[in-house]
Amino acid sequence: MDKRKNLRGTFLVLFIITFIFIFIFLTNVRTPRILNLIPQPHGPEKLDLPEVSDQTITPLVNTKHLLVSAFMDQRLTGFDIRIIGIFRRDSIQSLYCIFLCQSSTLSSTTPANILQHADNFGFPFTATDVMCQIPQSCDATHVTLLTQPDHVKDLKQKWLPIRNKVALKKENEFEFDFTVCVSTLFGGYNNVLQFAQTLEMYRLLGVDRVVIYNTSCGPELNRLLHSYSQEGFVEMVPWPIDKHLKPSWRWNPTEHGGDLHYFGQLTTLNECIYRSMERSRYVLLNDIDEIIMPYQHDSLTSLMDTLQPQHPNTGVFLIENHIFPKKHFEPSQRFHLPQWSGVPGINILEHVYREEPDRSRYHPYKMIVQPRMVEQTSVHEMLRNFGERFKVPPEVCRIIHVRVPLQGSLTLEQLKVDKRLWDFHERMIPNVDNVLRKVGLLSSDQQK
Ligand SMILES: *[C@@H]1O[C@H](CO)[C@@H](O)[C@H](O)[C@H]1NC(C)=O
Image (tube, rainbow, N blue to C red; front, side, top):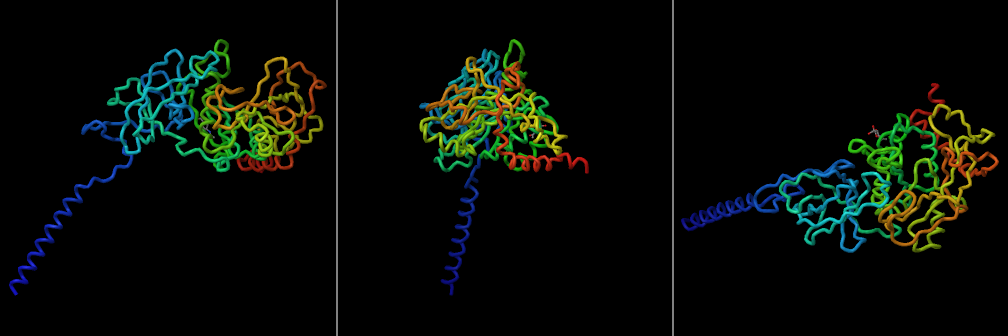
């Protein structure tokens, strides 16, 4: 009996000792750290790291420059990251990249290569790319810039998330076939009818997404755009450039003053190309008063399915601009519709007279591009791209651009009648009516 008691006692003691060991072990295991932004790269002292930027435009502290977005881009040898920004041309200085790695540690710094875009139009600020290499051991999730390579301890610059980290998709895996990039909306722009008609035309032509950079717009257009972005067809990107700089309303700094060409149009177009690179087969770079219109195909899809195999190495398709002066109205008034009478803006169906471009002078193009073949874009041409460029003949595709005349002296007889838009009226008009009704702008609604 005593022997058994002793045995039981021994088991009890063993049990208690084991329990104590397990307890000590458990309390010593550190809870795993999820990106807590307070890593300790240099020993026990804690670094108070800045936050991740939640703005589209992030000032680079202690400089005059602005940062916009960071993208993974390994197309140029020796570089991994492209940060798109707006830099003051007379204050370019040495910069260093630092990365936040997946293991929530800081990387070492690497020197940055600063590439100003050539098309600054004489303004003090210009679209700029900052290129960097990621140090070998770091699986980077965020990046930011330092003005001194060793000033890690007083890091104040907000982090930019690194986008486009997923591998390049195969040709048939894109989420979208066509994305339209509309550069900055500003002032009280309120051309609602032309905007709605153009967006609905794009939908009919096969566009999946329209990205719009918004500094400000008029009240009715704001309602329309909120409705489109809720539905998902339009992606609104806040663009508060006027909070940081004095943007120019035009393109000439000596005449119009200001810090930056057209509210940063060039930066937004480039940002949009990189934003679309991993998700869209093609990107259309045009303004919202312009429609890139196929004349021999019924959609952009069938147009590009024809053009691309004919030009397999081409990533940039240039489309000629054609102006339809808004002062000349089609006389039958067939599309002067009563339900649109209270909608501000131009009715593009009423303008069917087209200027023949004066090809002896400079004539602007807009572009359909494969974003993966673009490095830097301007408005009417590429600054840097891979592959070839092709000027699409105007009888195949041209831009319908309803606006003030370019050659104002031309009489009606000197203009060409072009009713290509009318081919789409049966589907376009009900779609425009639907969206205007949704936001309470259709005239029959207002009478109720
Ligand atoms: C456009 O920007 C203005 C100014 O920030 C804002 O008030 C408005 O809601 C924005 N509109 C849309 C549709 O995002």
